[in-house]
Image (tube, rainbow over all chains, first blue to last red):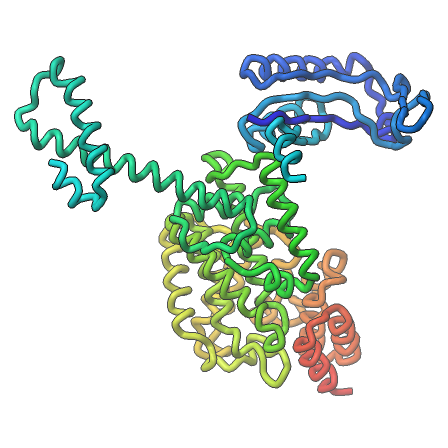
Length: 128
Length: 388
């Protein structure tokens, strides 16, 4: 079993051109809900959630002597992370099937990325 | 009993284990089911079955292990050592949609074709370090993302098979369309593609498009040596048909006939059939252009691309004259203006219509649009032969 991050990204320009209302989005919320239920029912669900808009982000940098706290995202960009699912799946093919459903449900592109496992961590430490 | 098993399996340990397992089953079942009429025979049969199961499991594990090792480690390996089912798993893994297209090609050539990284790099005209990195990254992705090592099932198989065939055909074209003698490794590519096509056919003998792809490659390859003369590309109508490889043609025609019998036409099968009409004709004048045109109509229905339309127009020129064909070709300008074959076709049609100045301009455009030295040489000569 491998854990995968299924992340959904938004685009600032596309948002500006989006004229849909909350009402229009109801079917999307419902579809995502149904998808989440299915993930849970089939034991693939680990965690998921939608994020508040990028304007609510704060960035913390304590890589030097003093911590720096800044309003805003890690990097100014047109693209931003909107939400994600963390799932567990036997292999990439299974994860991709979930991602297809998720993409349909939320109406956006979904990026699938594997988590490093404890075994990977151990391997990296010994390879070093 | 053990002795007969040893004779059967040629392995004492295996024979003893199998016998032991059979006895265990007997001890479990006979009290409840009753002793069978021929207990010795029953035990032997059961032991043989147990032995075969074990061999299969070991083989699968070893072969799976062997093949999986190919994906993760860098030691040189003998692809032929892996059993057929595993070649199939391997080719589907190498051609997984999650891998970049050029990575699929490289991995397939490395793991199934057994080409060295240096050879693949040379074939695709990239530095060896670039190719090595490409392959390493692909293997790393297979491992990290946990791309499964298996033949996809039912629903996905069609789509995934299409990807495998696309890789094989790409390798073939890479070898076939490059210039000739200077790049001998690229000639090996057509051979390699055909070999992979044969492997695919042996593994999936009843899939029509698989047969079609192999037929297409064989028939195209059969004309290889006649395609070049004096450093120039020789187009199909001018080729020395005596130089065509008759054995490849026979095999290709056979496959095309088989495809016709299967009655489920597709892209590769139709291209193969079109080639077969050409390779069937003893001379250019004998070419059944009406058949070619009909096949292109069918091909267009399956794959409605501008390139197919262009090639169909060539057949139309033979049946209905260059004027009508030129009108069709000109309609494709928006899609094909940067495609050298579009300019070549136009140039030829304009030449036949006696519109020399326009033909010259078209030849110039064609020459500018191709890097292939042999092709340029041919086009330059044709252009220079134009009257007025």
